[in-house]
Length: 312
Image (tube, rainbow, N blue to C red; front, side):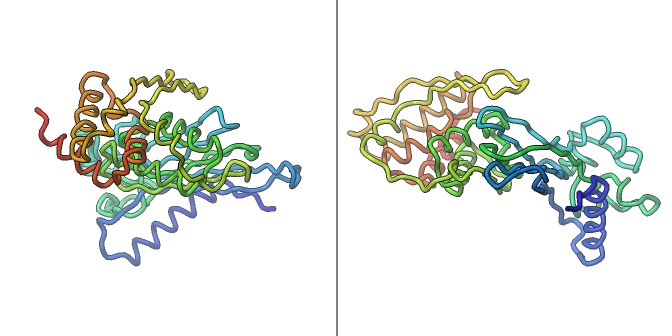
């Protein structure tokens, strides 16, 4: 099987951007991109199939490799105008960086489209203020219990890569429907205040990692009222993530009206933000929603209303 080179990835992206320029009249449209190519290795067998993973990245979408259900690698680097090599290219192309943005406007330094930042007629597309040149990373022997997660930047607006990986690991143990896992990840990101685009793809290699979600039980409701208490070490250079919250007063909450429960949750979340330096306990809002049968839209609206009332 033909092995695609990094240069072929680069040329394909630049050619696609050039075609977009010729056919698109709205020159201020643009998008970031992260994409992968999985190629089976010649030595692998069906019982232990392994793949070569090639990742291409343009902008600030991310690819995470969760290896062996224990370690996480962020295989992409966010292309920000403040990075030295990006800043040099922007200035050389006649632009500037202000407030971390290209020409004070665009928050990423690589993207498809955004042709208002690619208007230096003396330079090829690969040397403009904003370029569509991907970084290409290749990883060997992917498979088994490994997982690959592709997300755009809205997922990471309020969550680190470490926290996202921890959430995925928690939800996939015991096995859970991957589509449901990603739905809950997006609901969590929304509940924490993300207002950017959110898309996500989760690739599993071991069928035992995925399963249909089981129906909830009364025991689940009792467990859902407990605050998060977890300590996660995922084998990266980042420090351990340790989040601790005490138990919510379940019996008292059962006696409350829905309105009073929402008031309690708003106060609880504001306390976490102000005094614990956290935006929200991980997964607490989803557990609260499940335990007290309050849909996430109502919870989010209540929290947004309470946030707008808090002192600046």
